[in-house]
Image (cartoon, rainbow over all chains, first blue to last red; front, side):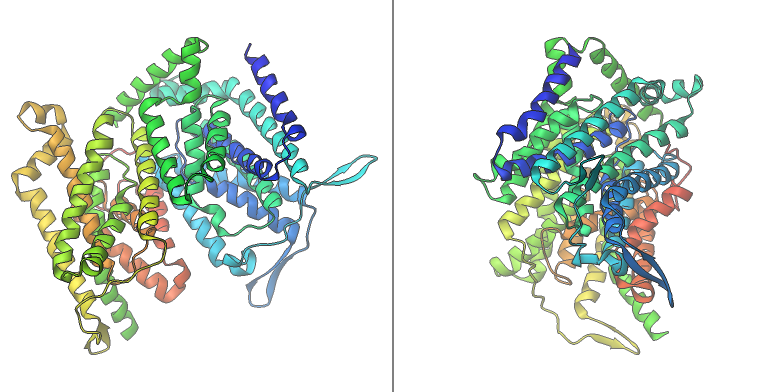
Length: 348
Length: 290
């Protein structure tokens, strides 16, 4: 049943560019798709390990900058006459480097910050993102600072026997984003259903018990952070090569908030949650734009977030699933996790 | 040397207002355990109240300051009653996300009402600065320093010397026992949040005339407040005051001797360093954070 729904949804998404000709809507779908990839990676941390990272945009931005700089090349003076010079590489190399380097940053942040939890973890991740943003803003030799990196080339794929395909049009980019999103979805799905995934949920629900049965806390959480950061980096790379101009505003805190809203409204800890939440909140501005000014759109955004948290604190997908009787074990599991969280807080 | 003295004077003025922000947040985040993303908005709100009273109503500068503080108190009480009271007992993440929603909505509201153009607030002080030897400081900044010091002393006495302060401390140590002893716990939650908010509004009202007023001015202020609270240890008021001056000193020296572009990075670096090496804060009693 669940597989059929997943396949039907995938089939629907594949068909969209065939009948949707409005370039504005297609553009909104592509950027929404990129943010959904980011939201899925955030969900891996927030929904499956219970760690709220409010600096997630840092990995997205690092991916964007790494990918852009790899394909543009740079010449950076380090000290005196010593320069680091990089000649442009093909954008696809930038895409893979973005995944690697973002993943490595995820490793560093994970190692350093998983010793603190809860509100402290949130604040460390915010600080990390802001420091990265300030470096992007001030290291002008490398990043052009507020002048932005421009003319970022589109991703090119070499097809055997057919030459090179430059993914420049919205039509191409839609399928590229869809492919990466689908891959990420199945990667995360595999991971959370593996024994690592069970270890993550065990940690989220009762850390003391999980440790007692031999789960390595730091190792499990760091693994989640690395994969989460790597996927966010891939999304950032797609963003850079699609928009083709990036400035330090990609690190804006509001973008992390957007991803968090997508995850929480859709349902954290549910694989489809970020996709559903992402589509709603990604396309909400498209429908609000004709009827209200941008400030009012953001007010609506904030109010909708508050209302969802008050009305459906578990998110849309789990609430609907519970209504339809699909989540048989899901409800009890989450209820018990809420209880254990509260007791954990009382002990802290 | 002269330059260093000037930096130290600037540090005092900056640190005084940071202390107001920090004390306000250490009450809300440190004691109530609410990760308060609206703290920066209250700072912005205080500054705009100043602007409204001085420029749109044309009233006296010194009258505007208490108006801003009371308005901050009322807005804080409103946020607590409408958003936090129904969520008491919810987990910390839910509360945090609701506060993020409130922050987005309120900041966009400020942008809608007052526009994105930065506004400056006139002050009645002479333009010529006070010069003492190699150091010069404007009269306005001197007033800000003294007003901040007065408010810090007031807040400190309120929390440590009054019956309300005692009830506050009792409530957050053990709210069930406090309730059994006849403390109106709901009222204490509301007043604590309102007091913290009014201090943030006071900081905004004091710094608004020094710099300029714009809707996003509170974002950095909020981060700095978090840095101060973490540096001083959660709920530690003396720690928050000392932390404010450390942050102000780090910013002044960072801007003066490293690069002014990284001035605002100091708060974040302090947060990361403190949480990695001494997560209980510099002046805290032993406490578990993991």
